[in-house]
Image (cartoon, rainbow, N blue to C red; front, side, top):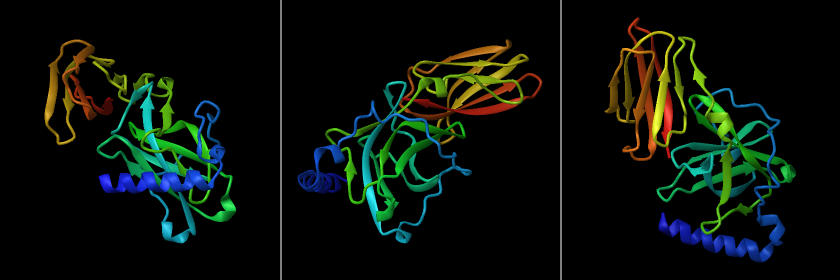
Length: 234
């Protein structure tokens, strides 16, 4: 991976020397937009076969939710509603996307998305598709962001159990329409890392001690109603 980073830096230096600065620099503030494309129908993302396209571009980015860096997501890039590339973060927290395209698509908007709680969430930023260009680098990665209002609203299932927030810094709250029996937090390997027995409609679990990652919150009522929600610990 370190060799790849060194090669990436060398490539960035070459691109910067050949192209105007305005074509490789991104102003995340001015490039915010509401995507006009539809969310993908299936998750996880299903990218195109890059061999069907003549060119590509690259993005080196960090992802933040409500100003907090998150490196546990899958991030996809879309052109005309089609997934042109998908990646997960490296061990160093960089999202390195290779985005397929053709020369005639130059200037088309590229939107970024991730999936949280089974829902497609669109990033605030977009870029223009340009062949053989790199947006961001290891020293100044592009910043992709998700507004907290998209994530921290109450998520209510049909069984009347709510689990909030999705981005958990310290405390997760579970509220049910009937008395809860038990609430558990599970690690990706299925191990129970927190559990609370309940006799009330509300449960609060403190998760400050957990390392960053993706977890499942499992809640069961005395009446047997059961729901599971995914949360992120940044």
